[in-house]
Image 1 (cartoon, rainbow, N blue to C red):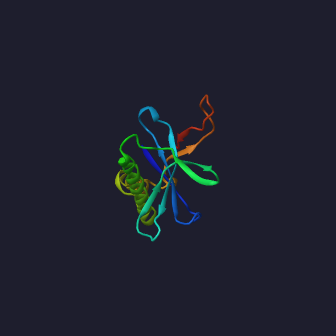
Image 2: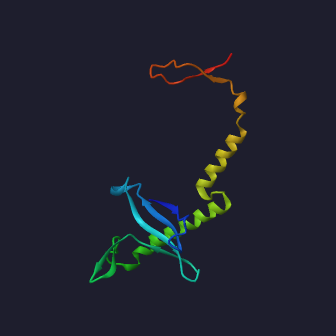
Image 3: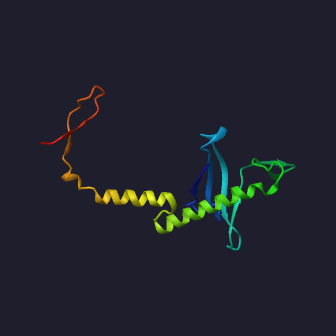
Length: 145
């Protein structure tokens, strides 16, 4: 599962930090996403709160919401998802603040940056684009002599 963070750059509603989606990569839910999560700054500024997908409805003019992701038996089952979302948002904040990714993504980004910096400038590369030569009509690189 991958957690996708979409920051709330508009600041509306107040206190909402980001929308969150869960993208499933394995099992019967692979290729699907669950939307409707959000991460909020707690009132008083101490901590974060995660809201889960819900459907709003009204009864006698009173607004209520029905949680779409519900525990089967153990009510603490949602804590693992809540903790994972908070951790993903904290990593997102760290990356945004430092412009330096952490973990495996950070290692990949550093290695890619080093490879790009070590590559010769484009003017020194002995290739040029020529007219299409393949059956598909794609431009093919050819060695300059």
